[in-house]
Length: 141
Length: 115
Figure (cartoon, rainbow over the protein chains, first blue to last red):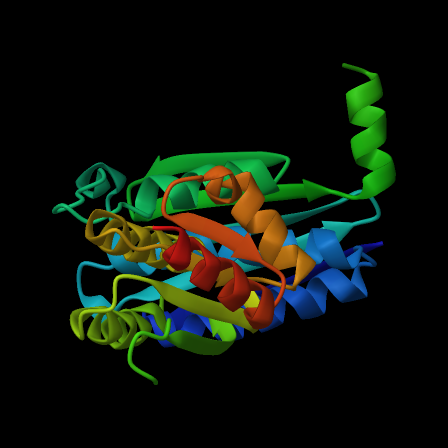
């Protein structure tokens, strides 16, 4: 079983809810448990919020592209923006920074988080294993 | 809102990067009225992300120095899990977690009498 879907959103925070719905739909089809689905929604939403906030030099004219793919063992979600990662180190201006917290949440909630710089933008790749696959991975150390 | 009473701020639905700016200005407006303490009723909140967590922390940072406290009411276990992961549930100063508004009011009014 392999399922794949691909879509783009305009780079606006109001589209986060749509992204979460799409992720939830795909995770349900792939048979993920409710808690896992919830956690991947948070992680993806963080990645997309980062892309909108820091990977979109032209604001809503930019797009964020998502690829969601799952098989019997895992789900992989790729988030590609049109920005440059080095421009987005945490700047707090005296406010609590949620940026660091966002990346922390992604790593806490997913089994793999990879951030890759590309010529045309930053790619965040998130992987969550299905429960039996995760137990196997832990058993293997 | 009665004088001397702790305000209860009710939030519904999904707290994400999109809704936080508006929510923040509303909560800060309540704090600006001279309220040191506040109860954030998240009983009907089904989703929270890092922007929502930053908002809770901002509220605590605002409340604490004024001798106040933030009471957070959470019932959704997925939301609670996210708060646990970021360590917010372990905050002891100027913050408490409750499972109902009644429990929060009772405990926080008690705190006030004790001062």
